[in-house]
Image 1: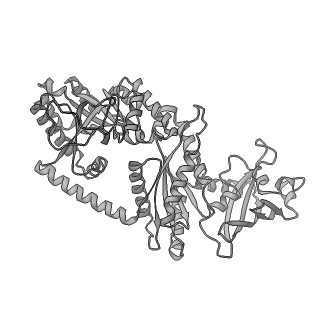
Image 2: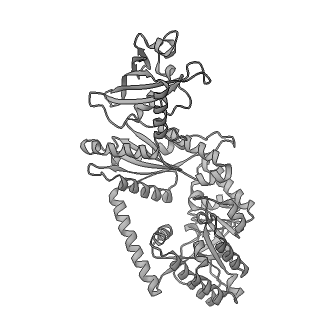
Length: 542
């Protein structure tokens, strides 16, 4: 067996070898492997991890006996095109007074071809090919294995999920190669902030999972914000030019009795979703108790909505849509008032099968209001599939087909994320609505997947930028992305509008982009009473 021992002092980077190490590796002397950095320079660029990565990936802490690690990698001793030497590296690292790796003792073994192929297959299955981090199954298995030790110890840990912001828009604007570059760069920047014992893995397309050891409730927000800041610290050089990069994070501290991994992941996802709504590009802490409470609250909302729909007593608010550069109200959006958060209503109705009934209720209410107020213009939100519902088409044909004066004052808003590979029946239904003079709008542009080909076929009259992107554009790194989205809207020949505009600064940014209208808190509060035909401008903060 061709093997050699070593001792690596991390503080000085000195790497001391057994007397036979140069012969084992086929080197004329020890100069090229005298430090950890020199040894790493010999690594094959395609190798998923080296010795330093293996030490960082261990989830345990040193109790005095050292912490074992293992890595399998390839060396190319004479440049990237030279023959590869497969190495198995096993050892133990020992901590300093602060619990960080101070020195490592181990052994390298040169693998023959059969062993190398087997080890390569194992390593390939453990690591995500794009980011070089643990793939989902391996990462979650490592977290699950660490939970008992966390429960027995006195030091808590934290589980976080990081999601790359605006990835779908980047893919559509610049191509999936750029999107992949952003995912890999985000993983690299977060990995650089981790300590020994912390774990990182790729959970899904734009999501990274993190297990942070020795992290309590006081520290988790600081840690999460540090990761967010590290990712957005500088622009990313790409073939399309420098681009901004940001991630939103959500997570929770793991207590001693928290052993249900599925519940932990779900709670982190809920925290992430809440954080992206509140402040994209930052961190939001959550807890298992909050997640349980949220689930119970969603059930209560579903019951109350179902009862109101059955009785025909659903309440609505009229939210003003104003000129982006002025104070005049152009129209109103009709929204259900069962909860202040429209996204929560959409989520709950989607999971309980109430979406179609709520969309139909809004249509019926809009028809009554349009008939009662000849100057009123209304927008209602709907899912594309409901447009083919027989109950929906019956209302359209009975109440609007012969009333072009009413149809011309109605806008149907469809979320962009739902406008992907539409069925022919949906396209036909949309065509019939437009034939009656009903306007079609696409909303939440820039959040979630964007099917540009479908949008071109649909040719919406207007496209509304997602509110969180408008708010986030105060960050210089996000300004370019927002401008690219606005350019995409113009290329589709649609009117540009903005949603969830919260302040004057966001309104100014929208005007600069050429937007014609805006909704949100800055446009004025929703009102419960049907607006008058000639609404007086609502006072808007200067």
